[in-house]
Length: 254
Image (tube, rainbow, N blue to C red; front, side):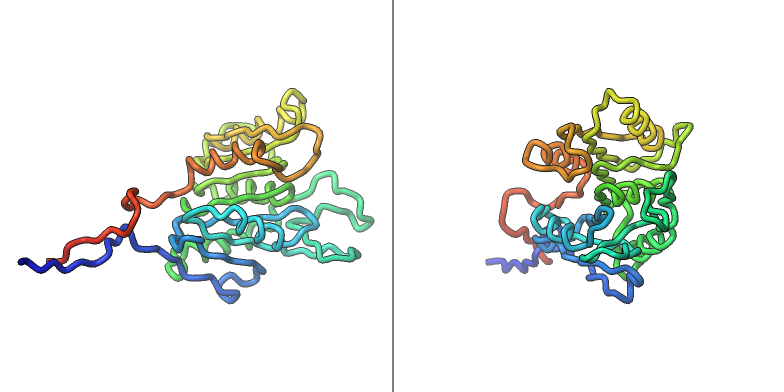
């Protein structure tokens, strides 16, 4: 009888990425979790909202439990003073008297974020830009959109929750990053139409997800509001190309 030498097929083996260290991603403070199935095919980077911390979005990443998807929850760099609990901001939004700035500048945080992306796609860590997906809420969503605009290269995707692109775009840029734009504004309003048009001028592929109107800035709640986002992710997240029939695949060694 012929003896067969078998080894697990490369397509069926988990593909884990190196866990980023604080020294590699310095000066960023973050929580990182590898893919729950050990197959690091996608990296989902979370940008929390104004006045929050990385913890809530690190917890969200664990609850989502997306297959093949590692999670990196960043903490915004600027602490907000005079609050009882830790709170952080991606860019300056208030005057010295804590009044809202009429024209905040989100680009101040872009250079260190650009460096972060460079480190993530370096040979040391090994992500490709098209495998990196951004998810931001409110100020964090604006930051994610501005980063995708600044790099002008194709990310895996950006999901923006209740967050406009503040840069004013006058002509079509045809950037290829797919965008999921979740809004609670009435799309018939002039403000909503202006903000949506601005994103559509910037990016070729924009999915508009309408949340419940009247909740102001708020994260998606319940299955009905998450369904559109999950469907979007289903079309952009990289999936394993291995055997779909279950069990481990082996190849014959000669």
